[in-house]
Length: 210
Image (cartoon, rainbow, N blue to C red):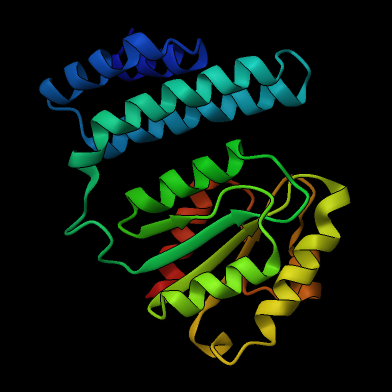
């Protein structure tokens, strides 16, 4: 089995204690940090699929995400493209009434490894909090909001509407995502971008900030 496959399997199995050592071994063997990261992202995709198909449940998904986090901690110094945060600041959070953070944490991790400084507001974030944070950090380039439930889609709509009313709106890009969100909904509520997963979110953030 290849080292990358072994890392992916370890993430899927949620073996957080083992992952750091494996990632370090892979780096020592000369494997690229991006390749290692991609194998872990691929593993989380598998976990996401299994979750969707009811083959696994939230606890298994959480342990896998934790293992990935541990792996990323070892990778971080090797991923820093230039200085950390050189690409600009991204404010991220899950909208009011929504307590889901796995997807948001994954997106935050990916965007951070793409060279951004991430200001993570956590979950259940009111629209005003996004606005206050951008005001406090005027060099913010992107605001990323997620809603993971159909019942919190109105809160996402309200958050984007509130951001769209601000005088700083022309200076930022608003990204949205989450399980029930679609490109059509993003267009309808006036967001600049929608991405379906963490890897494409990081890619899109780079394009928007360029």
